[in-house]
Picture 1 (tube, one colour):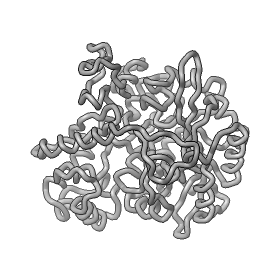
Picture 2: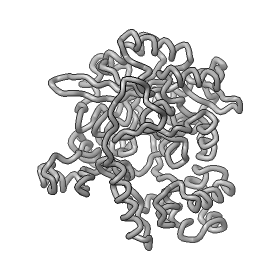
Picture 3: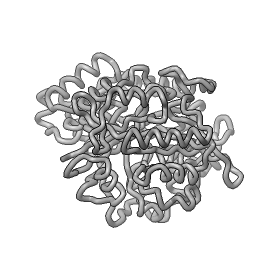
Picture 4: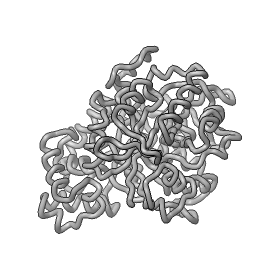
Length: 442
């Protein structure tokens, strides 16, 4: 069976998430997107795991089912913040578990280490990554730890602000238990292929969504062909990088990610790595250090040229969300606009899901549903023929189509910058209210 999986997202108990994140909403919009397997997100949060127990049933396969049979894998994300080698390290890790029993044992083990699981759906702990992996493996050898959004500047294993230059430097003797890395929105597999040291790891892609809307959920995903959908079969396909079972990943164009280029959003500065290096990595406006993006960081660590494809690499397809394409064509900046949703719904009604539109629809069939320019734009995105203005320092990139209203587009970008630059919410010891916002959303 074909499995389209987004294994990393969040509940409403994480900061900067939708207050309407519920299992019914997740399954409804996952189907519209074209997904048939989701991570639950946030199983470490006591309120969310109780909600999961009330909404999902176990059947012994390691896949949980809602009342309509939609599949979920227990997942969570943990933020490790600690000092190593004279530097503060901030690394996020995804955790996958095969049962409520295993998830609860992991939660108990973390609580014994004084981790406040009630504080946030993505709890912060002072446990170094090697110790965290050891704790998880001590509970269950078939639990999985995956470095999350591995290249983003602030909270990742290779991040320019707090990361490492090698996986082994971060996970030390527990590197043996790391089997996969999450590419994140600002990198694609071909960027990771430039590091020979990463050849032994599978590259997975997930949305890290903070809402259920289809322009967030499933924007990155993993495509499998499995004899049966079980936790062990899924994990085996990832760990073995089996091309017969792990077919490909769906990635947003890396330029779409909000940390692809270097920059300083408050000064309206976006720079390629080459341009940033010429300036000594300093902002030419305020003279402060630029936020060094993912592309720059990859080039620092790469030991292979662009275009290198290692033997056995799992292929990928590059897309951007359908609502982004419609938005750009219509010149409407709000992705939840009724006008955009009306066009989107027409396409879903005709083709069945967003992935069916983006991956499989024929141009002549598209033109029977929407105008010619939009039909052509969808095909151009599929073929990689669309310019993406790179994202930087917390601002998403965006597509640029021929003939589009540049003035409207620039106003949209300015709004995005203003929103990204809002002051960071102060942290609280108590659980955040659903929907509470913070400066950086991953």
